[in-house]
Length: 284
Image (cartoon, rainbow, N blue to C red; front, side, top):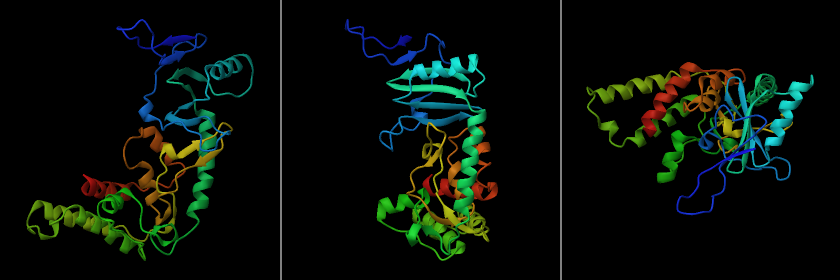
């Protein structure tokens, strides 16, 4: 076991180690930035002390306060000395008390994706007769929430997709006070006009039950590879493209992640391109 950490030059006392690595496995190929991983927590006390997150198309990391270097060393030993199916350990370390095991994702990825495919099929088979939050509550999304925080203004629920599109345009107008009085010959006016036409080209989508925030932080994989979906705050009934847009919109994910999402959420590239333009106009 190797320990690395800063020392205080003005003190004889060595501070608490920051990084611990395995002498059997050697140094990891890289150390992940903790800011790229959701905080390790235990939503089901006594049952979960770790989380899985996808690093790239072929790599998975298991991390949390209950993840140990001994676990990684055991996995590596089993894979080298038996025929038991086990992810290949690429590296392991403990950082600030949280263990991290970086492993191959090939088999486990398929298990997770198969579950997500089933979950999405079940969810999207539930149709809605309005657009908005669950139980006919207002829309909950970044395009609208900024206004709620500032003015308590609510958007929706809407009777159909056309009404929802009008709500999006209302959010844009409220985000830019005075924009309705622009010179009709100005560039900004014509940009707004083009965006309005693009938004209203979004039509004839089914309204389906939608989680609305399926980023990696809300997809928890338990130790037995059971997938648990967290944070249903944004759930409701939205046009069929909304789930894909919200799972991929903010560009923080690697392209390989998006290719995996495409396997369990039907992709809507054109609609997402339009909504990305809207989001950037509303929130800058």
